[in-house]
Image (cartoon, rainbow, N blue to C red; front, side, top):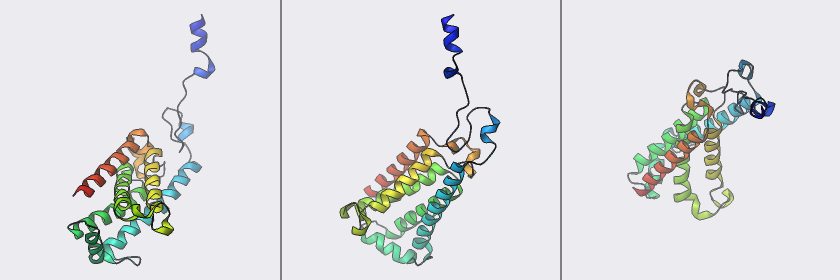
Length: 194
């Protein structure tokens, strides 16, 4: 009798779990019927952050938005010790460009986050790390913010207003965050060791 009472206790009833963006892991259709403020907030964050990062990559690759283009970026990478400079300039620029676009549309979000995390770890180690924390002193502040935002979006998931909503990694979670941080970190370590 006491077991029956415990199992039927209202606090122990099984209900669908709702993701912060309103997506449900259960069968309650009402939880997934409308776009939530969290979905719109994630879309705003992804679009702003992702498109700015894509533009930053376009500066390096194509000389758009006041950038210097691939030739000058290649020389800059070579001066930092990346050899061959052009190869690493292309890899860095494409990581920012494609990673930013991926985050903006919510496509392959953990991989897009990993691309940005890898580039930012490289930037912190080779350029900004020696200047302390604050961006005004040339420090890591900006790179840390980009890394944390990319990792947070991978962990939270891109929201319902994203292409990834159709895939199992589209809800975010610990595995997606670990993938983004692990792949980004591994790519940075490999790049820095070359």
